[in-house]
Each structure stands twice: as structure tokens, then as C-alpha cells.
Length: 355
Image (cartoon, rainbow, N blue to C red; front, side):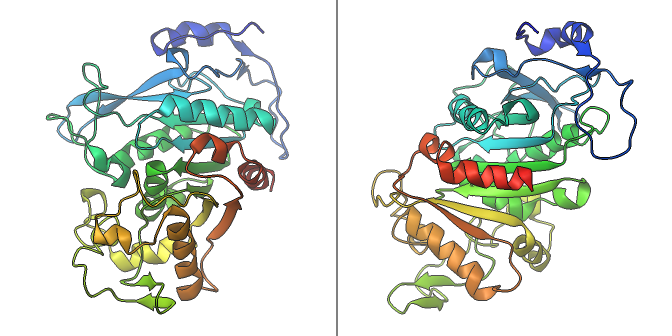
């Protein structure tokens, strides 16, 4: 079929012209021979052709929009995506360059022959200089679930993810979608780890969800301890009053989790399927690595060290309970493209989706 890229406001015409009788492989005994599935080539350009928006309404009834990149247009409930078996959410870093992360992940999916069967979504948490009229934007703490900076519409970045999950939960539109990966690099990695803690999407939807935290410089700790390299064990810090404030710990939590119970969240957190994907050369101690905040310094000397310490914590305090794991990407530093196109990541992704 000829490749067609259309913007969201003409999607209705698109769907009317691109429904074909195609029956994907199906292991159950459901008769799907009469269903017309939507057929379209995946969008791979990482530009406006792959951009879509979701309407967001505040509790007060005020409206705004949120943009995201996707390889298949999903904002039309007349489409039936029979080809989509799994989904990947990839969260951008500090530069908020969702288009680049979309392109990087498209390459990884293409190289693993998963592109045609995988829905790829790259949310774009814009700052106030990137937005157009009526669009949502966030300050720098978007990565830790902050509320948007708009005067009329206040919504957490985590709530945006919840809204996207609600769309994917439509079984009429996504009849065979079962497995989902949420991953982020750098600042996006902090978003991924803290969203894993804060959300309860596993209990709301019938999805198998795994989180891949790539080269984060910050980590949430379920307990009030940090690794002390001089004593080679975990101790309670005594010289840093803010070491346990959100997102490092549960003190002064964001609105999204303010009414939730810490113990319940921590219990759920250790059972989430989380992989710490660590570039072994991500060892810079300057630049964007936070070395001025004592709460950050207590996490470790550099990003690789901080990731190792986080995994060590889980193995030390929850050795028989946690479902966390560590995967090393040899010879790679703080580079999202190199992480996501590495053999380590591609093998990890194939293992999750092929199980």
C-alpha cells in the first residue's frame, strides 16, 4: 500500500480509505475473519508527519492539548489496529527532543524487525518557549511528575501518561496489544523510574508492563539510606537535610501521590519489572551531572555509579522480592542513541516482547 502520512485533523478521511480485511496471527480461538483491520505503513520521519495531539481537560473543565510523536495514528476510535502486538513509550531527556528519541527508537525497532507490530509513542513535555496556543508546558521538574505551568490547566506529567494508557486500553481499537515497555534516557530515566513508583496502571489495565531506566542521574529510594563508599554499606545520611525529598525520597511529595500511602507505594515498587540499563562509560563527574546538591551527590560519583548503587540497594534490602535487574551497555557513555541502538537494549527488548 502506498505510504500516507496525514495530520490528525484529517484522520477521519484516512481511516475511511485504509481499512482492509487482514487477519493477524491469533493464538486464541476467536473468529476474526470478518474484522476489517486498519492497514497503514508506520510513520518513521520524526517530524510533523508523525506528530499527533491529545485533548486534555482540567478538573475545572478547562481545555489544553498535548503533543506526542507516534508511528501509527491512534486518535481515532474507528481504527482497529490488528497488527499491533506491543508498544514502546520512549521519554526524552533534558533537551526535550522527543523527535530525536522517536527516531532512535524507530531504528531499534526496525533493526529487530519489530517496527510493523509495535506502537511507538514519544511524549513531548515542552517548556514555555516551545509551545503554541493552547498547548501544555512544564518547568524543569516535568521529569518528577510536576504540574504544568499553564495558568488555566494544571496537570501532572504522570497524568498525561495515564491519559495515553487509557487510549491504548480500548480493546476494540487495540485487540491484540498485550505488552508495553516504558523507557527513558537521562532525565527521561528519572521520569520512568518515578512513574513506575507513582502509577497504578498495572492494576487498572490488562497489560504486561516493564520499565527500562537508562543512564539516570537521579533515583528514588524506598528507604532512608544511601550507599556509603567509605564504609561499603548503606547508612542513614546525617549531613544533608534534603536527601529524602521528592524525587529522591518520599518527603514533600508531588500532588499526584500526595494522598497515597508511602508503604503501599514502596511495596508495589519492588514488584514492578524495572531494568537499570547502564552505559559503562557514563562516568563523567562534570557537565550536566548534579554535583552541587548533597541529595544528588549521595547517590554516587557519576551516573554509572548511581545506577549500580540503586540496583545494589534493591538486592540488599529486597533480595528475594524485587523484580528489578541490571543490564550493562559496554563502552557507551551518556548517549541516548548509542544506548537504544545497542545490542544490549535490542536483546532486552526482544526478550520482553518474545516471551
